[in-house]
Amino acid sequence: MNQSMTWRRLLPVPWLMLVTAVFLSTFLGVSGNALAADPDAEIGIAVPAVDADTWRQVKDGESFIDSRHDSTYSLINQSGETWRYLRNKWVSPFGLIAVGGMLAMILLFYLIVGRSRLDEPRTGRKLLRWSALSRALHWTLASLFLVLALTGLNLLYGKFVFKPIFGDGFWAAMMSGTKFLHNYMGPLFGILLVIVLLRFLKHNWIKRHDIEWFKQGGGMVGNKHPAAGFANGGEKAWFWLLATAGIVVIVSGLVLDFPNFSQSRDTMQWANVIHALGALGLTAVAFGHIYIGTLGTEGALEGMTTGYVDETWAKQHHSLWYDEVKDQAVDADALEAENGSHPSAPGAQGNAAPPPG
Image (cartoon, rainbow, N blue to C red):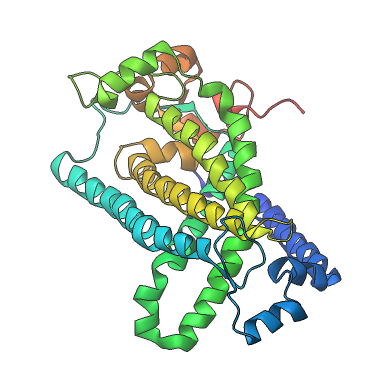
């Protein structure tokens, strides 16, 4: 494919990045102004009911430990110790087991089973699978996910790795940047995820042949590849995981991101636990998704980089979809030579054609 056509197909990606940058800059400015407009309101939420009577009780040695679970004003809230216990004894180990275990499983699977290769030679004829808009949405969402995953892991485990090596000064600056990126990229990721879920919803309803796909382990059980439509059973499972656990992670993250809406400390603590568990689970599964879509499956990455897949790949992995679109296959050489072979050209199937308007 010549260089000019490549730039034309990828043109929406930098434009989307530019729009994202402008949106993020505006969001940062508006957020900063909103907080600066009424700092006393934020302090009132963060440090409520600390008045002269409270300090008098402290000075006189009176008990100021409040054991009520929903306390929002005591100097010492014992539910905070419960949160600390859950975070250190359950959340952190769960993350190491989930993420580390998934990476170990991927490595073992690659070493033992190897890459899923095409059973037949490529035909040289291409089918349009992803439009430029769909690819731009996917890569932007994936980039935001990776930033959030890495910064989240750093917030949870980074102090055990980087602080001893680089010292407190570097650690403080690193955590400040990490927290900034995580807090401000989170809402943007949430908005984009909802857009992506709505755009791809029609291809991810569970159907009868998806049950057979799971019974055959996506082709690992038996000697033939199970039938699949535009999205196979594994892709649909990932979609619905994002649509459920992903939304829970977003909502809990917003509770943490905007603490000036009268949330109690207990609400924030539980939101933190839920957010961490959901995000760690999604990160672990995402590593599997990334492996299958890149190194694990021959020809899979081509669809999300160029928009097109070879007939052989479509027939082997998405036979039902291939039967629907096989008449639209175009020769690879002709595709490179013709200016009219843009991914969003008329006749594109599935996610390829942008919605009307």
